[in-house]
Length: 73
Image 1 (cartoon, rainbow, N blue to C red):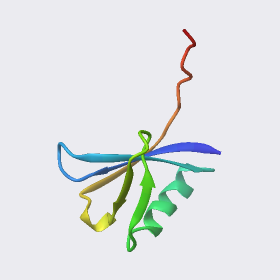
Image 2: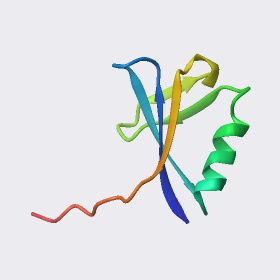
Image 3: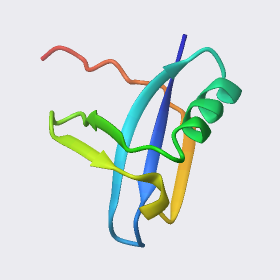
Image 4: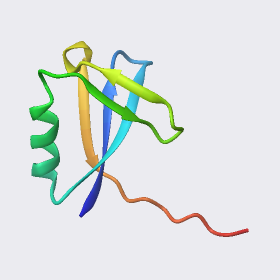
């Protein structure tokens, strides 16, 4: 399973980022497209709860994400 970064842009300065898991880019896109008419809710990497409706978003960007392992100190 691959990890994908989904970024919801409201304008040039405001955006929310979410991470999803899917087997392929196509499946990730299908998931995002299936959510067009519903509210989307999730917690971001800081644990903050978000609820938004995709119709209020100007741009949705999806890209595969390659998480870097943090080196122990």
